[in-house]
Image (cartoon, rainbow, N blue to C red; front, side, top):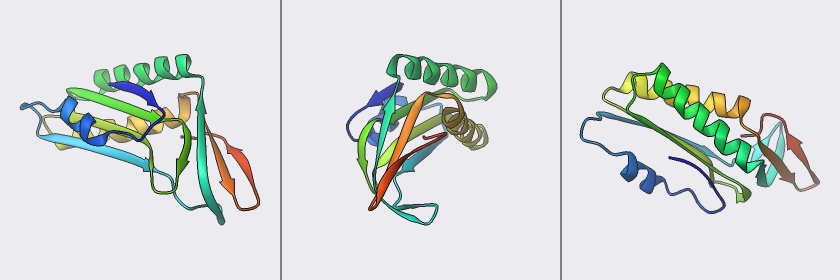
Length: 136
């Protein structure tokens, strides 16, 4: 499951879709919008993406994690558009027979998404806004 969505991420749906009786582990990471960054209060975020390229890169991350770790599957869902404080902007779910590879794949996938996928973050403050490099 690789998706870019404009609405709330359906975490329960992700868990249901990847569920399998062979899996003893579901490692889930949610990247939520926080109310501060670098000492400034954040009002909300906006994410934008070159969607065709971003989807291809997300699929490449998924493929690399499946090849590198002993996991059965991996899902990445990233939200774009305006996102309010407390809402999830990204979800990564790795499922595996055992917890260690699920945790490792989940973290590595998120780090790779942040470094390589063309999704761009803009933070809005009380006194202005700015684009954030490495913005997922």
